[in-house]
Amino acid sequence: MEIALVLTLLVIAVVLFSTEKLSVEIVTLLILIVLATVRIISPEEAFAGFSSDFIIIIASIFIISAALEETGILDFAVVRMAELAKKSKNLMLFIIMFTTGIVSAFMNNTTVTAMFITPLVSLTKRTNTNPSKLLMPLAYAAILGGTCTLIGTSTNVAVSGYIAKTGLEPVSLFEITGIGLIIFIVGIAYMMTIGQRMLPDHADQQLTEEYKLQKYLTEIIVMEDSPLIGQLVFASDLTTLHFRILNIIRRKENFLPDFRTRIEEGDVLLVEGDLDNLMKVKETKGIEIMADVILEKDLQTEDIRLAELMIPRQSNLINKTVKEVNFLQRFGLVVIAISRHGETLRTKIGSISLQLGDVLLVQGASQRLAQLRSSSNVALLDEFEPLLFKKRKGTFVIVAFLLAIILGTTKVLPLSIAFLMAAIACIVFRCISTEKAYGAIDWRLLILIGGMTAFGTAMDNSGAADFLAKGIVDIMGPLGKLAVLAGFVILTVILTQPMSNAAAALVIVPVALKAAVEMNSDPRTFAIAIMLAASVSLVTPFEPACILVYSPGKYRFSDFIKIGSPLTLLLVAVILLMVPVFWPM
Image 1: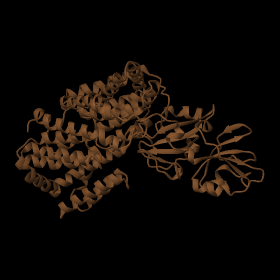
Image 2: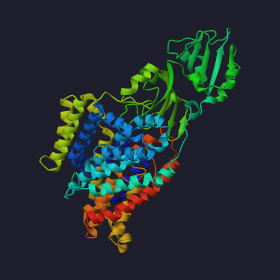
Image 3: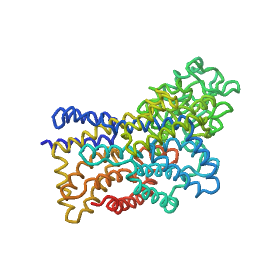
Image 4: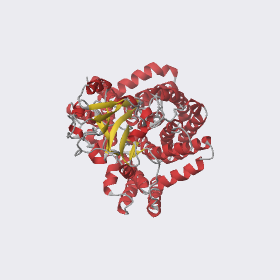
């Protein structure tokens, strides 16, 4: 009965994680409540994962990474990288992937990808290269670079924490560096050869063409007998017909309306709306619809510009609608359209819930756009202006980080204490404010990892792990230990599509450990193979780093399948060949 319940909860979790009807942290907590209520796990076991030292390590890494970004040292590195990369496009691709991977070995890969997107988009404009040629390699390098150290991904830290809880030796900081470098080098070699030839070359377009806005934009002249005269712009008859007034040309002056603006006789209104509603507007007395094609210059002046904003991982706009965040009042910008996973959303913009990686086409004053360069809620995909390099503070953060690595590696201090000490030092010496430090931590990820660690305990307590392990060994065992390991690795790769990498690994590891014991194999070999497999699943763009580059790179879903599938198979083969060499079964 308990086995059936746990496995049913697992299926429910996979479905809810993939559909995102509920946020992952809520799903995780609800599962913990059920498991604790039916007493498969005790309250202490349910929340043990949240008090584990690996949670402290992950949170500390987030803070240190944010401090590095805050001091401008990474922007400085990007500028230097761009200067070196101008010599040739092949050299540029190699430098981008190599640098990204090295940084990602010590920082969260989603954070690294988000930091490099804006400067790389700017670099593509200066070198006449399409973003689609660089952004997918950027994301892949960040993901694969994370396999080189324990702290390269939260998945590595979580799996190490779990196996330590079962009595096995945890993964040390550089224990996986050897195989991680092999995975990383194979990834670079693939993208420099086969992958580079398959990368799409999506031509750069004007923003109005790219978002297909021409057929949704119309200019309306307000005549002397129009009932629109005197109406507030955002409460006019046009608004009730779901038209949005973007610009007003009044006495040859082009300006953006605000909530106090009223329509006057002779105004030329640039409106956006559905073609069906346009037919209704044509029947309205006192207006004249201009038939001219709307061009990008009609939406921009010396002071008013179109721009693209990306929603990064740390944004507090995620899961909130444009209307809920009062986008116009808060940022002084009008959201014209939203690009999400290759699809352009143009209707009912105010009710669209913003998601990680969304790219917003906005219109607003140049001054307001410039103010967004330091915002943590949106990333301006425009000309890159590096933050002021705070050399002294940047050097301090690097020294504190290196010291933590040395102290943790030599076991002078536990890793959790060493990294926590470095994170607190960054705050105390004002390399980052307390508010930004808290904001840098991905609390949703910590809840997910803590909760899924408890789910692993539930699989042990209920006997579900034994049940699944025995079934897998019975089916695959006659083919040999390597075949069983291959089965777990492939299952992990498949599960990382609907679930996060950490969640998938924490679901499979308890079963794999039982199977290893059943076959008299080393459980750590299986745990490390699964840990690495969770980071090489590049078949679909569901990994957060890939989601971030999807819209800026103008990719299609098929681009990731075409390029990522062969690379994933290649890396799975590397894992199956090399893990038993480094950790004999």
